[in-house]
Each structure stands twice: as structure tokens, then as C-alpha cells.
Image (cartoon, rainbow, N blue to C red; front, side, top):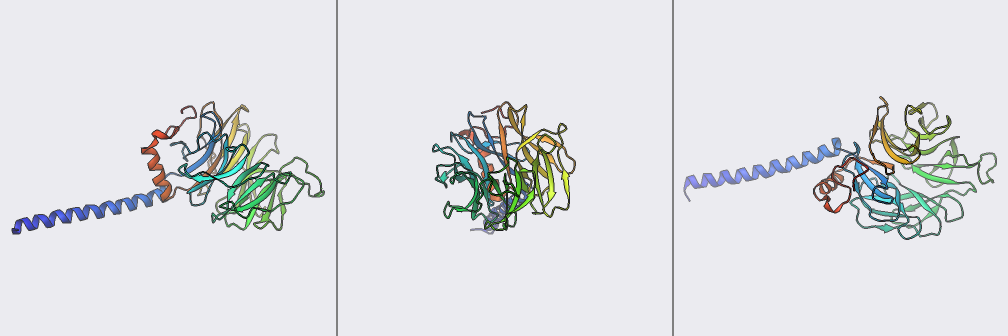
Length: 342
């Protein structure tokens, strides 16, 4: 080999190696950007394809993707903390039970088997347990189970309704709603939903708010957003956990009548919630906490609700890229921001 040929060979090898290194660095930087600055995903339920199915979308309402298919009503979905799985309620096997599936819509697994309604799954922050509502003992009580469905344990024991448990961000406390009457705990309740707190093992159950439903912990665990009907309409209030301060975030009729799940953005600056327009068609809205600017995320004549927010992880980024480039088999995917398209 001549000296000139040798130099050309070295130059080609150097160029190829440099290109590969730059590509790897670029991919790494792109993934870091997606993790820290990329879009975030919101789970929700929609009837746009004929029955209640589980979808997800970017936090600006784009890339709406159907995750379940003909499950005979899938609803009340909850992200696992790592974004790899989703827990939700479905009548897939004829009875309302709790299921999990991968965030790409694969590997459906049933977790509960009881004759009563099982609903409102909520993952613990470490992803090891799921709190949920069960009617298996004759009325609604709060239970907890391992993420694989084992060790199902009853945490509340009241003749009133105890529903919709939500873990605190540190995993030490579970807040839930109840119709209990404090002065008469033996009664079956007064029909008014209140907010209670308890330790994650079910101990130390205490009344926290006299009126409230669809509660949501702030990401830092210092506040709770909830719906109150104290003024005759569903309005969002935010109260510090230590009860020292409360603010009203939405006020009817300036904002829609709120009637559904509330979920915080990971930075605590925004909240998404469900509202029924004209008492018929549920839609999902986004509100900025500081400016109170309202954005509608879903549209159309179908019902959309039950939002649940997750920070976009590297895994989620690759899942979203796959959906964008392989959406032919997914009925409502590909960046369509509408409730009308199938």
C-alpha cells in the first residue's frame, strides 16, 4: 500500500469513527433533552371509537393514541411511576375489575377477581403497590395490593362509602374520599363526600376536609387540589396539607363546571381536569395556576375525561417515536388533536 493510500484509509476510518461518536453524543443529548424538556404524556378515557377506551396524549393535546381496543369500557387509568405500565378499570371479562398493561398497549393482565366493583387504581410512588376501591364486602372500601395483584388488603372498615384513594408523593399517606359522619361513625353515611387522610397501612384515619372530591396531591406533597361544590357548582380549590392556606383556582361560570379527575403537571404549574359541557360531553382542560389561562385539550361530540399526567421519560420518548412512525395499526394516533377522528 502506498503512503497516499494509507493516508486516505486513515482519513476514512477517522471520519467514520468521528461520525459515529457525534451520532452517539447527539442521540444522548436528544434523549436528555426529551427527558428534561420534552413533552409530557397524559392518560385519559374517551368514547370516540364507540365505547370507553384508554388513550394518551402529549400535554398540549397532540399525539392522541388509543392504548386499549374493545375492552367493554376501560376507564380511570393511572400511570405507573416509571411510565412503563398503566392500571385501569375495565369490564373486559364481564365485571368491573382492575387490570394493568404496558404503556404501549401490550400485555393485558387482570389483577382483581371479585363479584363487586373494583375501581380507582392509584400506584404508590415506588411502583410496588396499588391502592384501589373495592365493593367486595358489600360497600365501598379502600384496599391496597402489590403491583402484581397479590396481598390484597383492606385498609378501611366503615359502613359509609370510602373511595378514590390517592398516595402522597412520599408514599407515607393515603388520602381518600368518604361519606362518613364523624359524630355517628356507625351510620352508613350522609351522602356528602369528605376528604380523609390515613397512614399507608390504614392507621390513623382522620378527617381533613368537610367537602371535597377528586383530590390530587401536588408534586411536592405540600398541597392538595380538589373539587368542591360549596357554591353550587364544581370548582377547584387548592389547600395546603397543613390547612394554613386555601385558594380558589376556578370559579363558575368564568370557568367550566368541574366534574372529574384532577391531575397536576410534574412542575406543579398547571393542572388538567375533566368537565362535562352541557351535562353531556366531557372534555379535558388545562389551566395554568398562576395566569389561570384555560386550554381545551380534547374536542368533539364524544366524552373525554379522567386525565392522569406523567413526566416524559426516555422510555416514553422512544414509545412516542414508535407511535408516530408506526401508527397505522393504532386507530387514533399520529398527532390528531380532535375528538372526532378515528
